[in-house]
Amino acid sequence: MGNDDETTTPSREERTTELLEMIWPETGLQTTSRLPRRPKDRLSEEDTIELQIDFVTLSLTPLEFIQLASFLRMSIDGLLDQHPGYQRAVVSAFDIRE
Image (tube, rainbow, N blue to C red):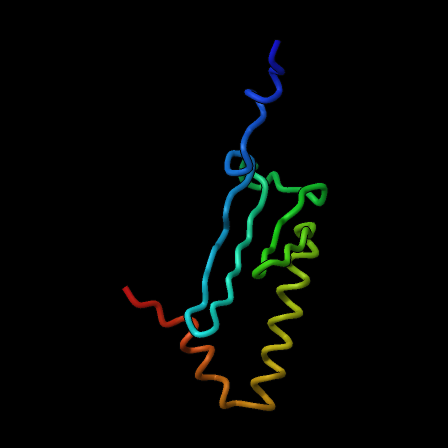
């Protein structure tokens, strides 16, 4: 007899929602973020958000994810204060062409 668990276990795509996936054309950097599917406002600190950067995957709680994003934002602000020439990279990152 077969194992019923194999047919009833939801796939990764059914269990998660992809927030964003980007491949940066300038560098080839591939980034993806996913979180568990939950009703609106039902994500908890027991849940895990996956942040994948090329071949590295970080599994973070929602609070850790927000803290990491805040840290990166502050780091970028510091970098741009010291090296304003990189402001072009920021503008280019959000120049979405159709």
